[in-house]
Length: 385
Image (cartoon, rainbow, N blue to C red; front, side, top):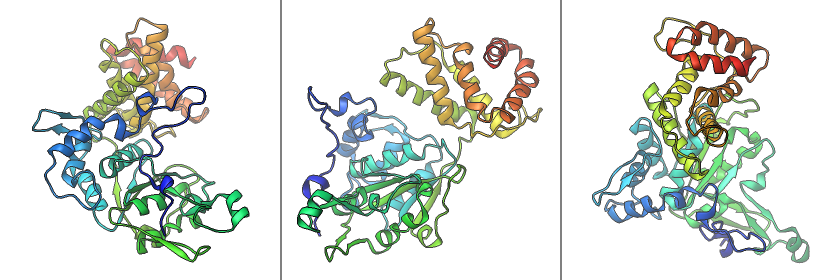
């Protein structure tokens, strides 16, 4: 069964009607999709890529891995890293998409699952917008298909009345579909993926037809088992996935690098001035988060209690970006401890009762004892009062 052309067309969401003005272009978006934000890198990789490509892939597996991990091409083009972590993890993820098994990116919140998913889809298919956002209220129609009820009532079930889901469109195009937060979707809705992933077909019994996936189709799902409201995957569905676990950064240096890169990218998109010397404060935020997350100070001498939050790199990025905004709009443009103190407090103290005790104890037993952290200690005491 063919999917309606206007819906199946790749990249159909690039322009949107902005009302009395003109259609919005990708360059004007606050956060462009990966295939637009890094179009020059993808084009350079495609031009230099002479390796075998699976059906309908824009790049070879080697080039996809290079796009995510970074490198320098023969023509001098620098490909910026999108993921900082073990190379083998990326290689396994990319290889999985070249097989008949779907990919499940698993990890605690803030380990770049969505980020990696988007960039994989952009590099493989040139379109990262075939997305189903999982929530507790995600209906079966979001994964299978729905109906235009005006046409359905007027003419009955027909191809014109069918509204394909992003997954159905990906099957028809031979593209990569994405399902975010799979474990937030109710279990009975999750299981609608079983036939799609095992048989590579999506029946439409109302029309007595089916949509069969063409070569190039695959699916990336993300999930974590730390948040509340998680629905476990059935064993039948889990068998359809190859699971790749994205870990937290192994070293402080790697985490500082990740946070600094993303803060720089976000700062440019928000038109925030680059701080004269912000790496020291980034390193301080990362140190605080890692010590509270691990339950021990960096030197291993002092045990500390851990708060209820995950204190992931994503939260560190948010804290530093907020601090940059404070420094730019209400300071002298230099990122200082006072600019990040409130953000750290908000990230650490999620449970007002228990987490506040943990934070106060950490301030007094660890931060206060560090001579070069006195300005940070004063700023944190001020916002914690």
